[in-house]
Structures are given as structure tokens and as C-alpha cells.
Image 1 (cartoon, rainbow, N blue to C red):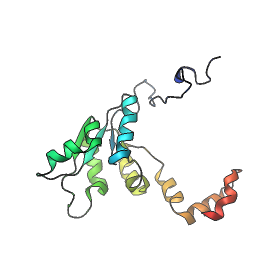
Image 2: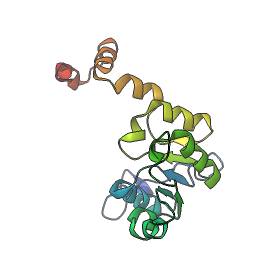
Image 3: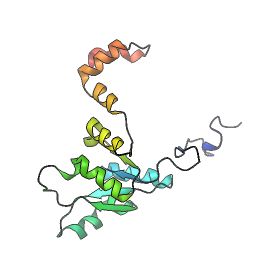
Length: 175
């Protein structure tokens, strides 16, 4: 019996995602910048490697810790390319949350996408807009979806106006 997934199914019956492709067959995403770190970044990098997609990691450092950071951060070691954001104690903004700096690094590195991981920038509609306005793919929901569904009251009002037949709608009072 053949699998309904065709060639995408392995012999064990597991589905293996294929990279999204442009009309000419080239991968839609060839080199994402991962703006997260730690275990989340490692999982993203591992998945991208399985899909033969290069990755760019970021890390903070200063002159004294540059060598140590590059060697001890697992996500930095796993990524195809790693870029320092500079010292953690920068004036103005925390370097991992400095949207303009991250967009510039993305452009300089030749990254065509930004994967924000979880938390921090993955829930930041302004960051998503800055990335998209720079012509870079943001891996995540639209800024409109983030703004609407990121706040419990707004989400509840939106779902109330756009009534669906989803059985979970009856539980909205728990939001």
C-alpha cells in the first residue's frame, strides 16, 4: 500500500518536510539568521542541516571573551557562520533585542531570512515589520497576527467577531 505522502514519507511512515521552493526550483530560504541562542537555536540549526540549509548564529562577546564564546556556545559551533553582536553592555539597547543591528547583520551576512526562535523577537511585531521591510523573510506570523493575538483582550474580541465553528471557541472565557 502506498503512502498518501508519496515520496515525502520515509519507509517508517514519518513525514519529512521539504524546503519551500521558488517557481524556478531554488530553495526559498537558503541562509537564515537565527536570533535566538541556546537549545532553541541548536534545534533550529539541526533541522536546517537536515534540509541542507546553511545557518547564521549570533553571540555576544568582547575582546577578552571572543575566543571563549566562539568555543563554548553550542549553537555557535553548530552554525555554518557565527557573527558577534559585540559586548553585552552596549549603550541604548541589549544587542539581542536591537532590531536595526540584527537587520544590518542579516544583510551583511547575506542571510535571506530571520528565524527568531521563541520569545523575545518572535513576538515583536515591529521587529517582524523591520525585517520584512528590509526585503528579508521573517519566519513567523504576520505583524498583524502578533498584534491581534498577542494580547488576550484583543484576541478574545477578534475571535468573538470572527466566530468559527472551532470547538475551542467555547473556552474563550478562560483566556
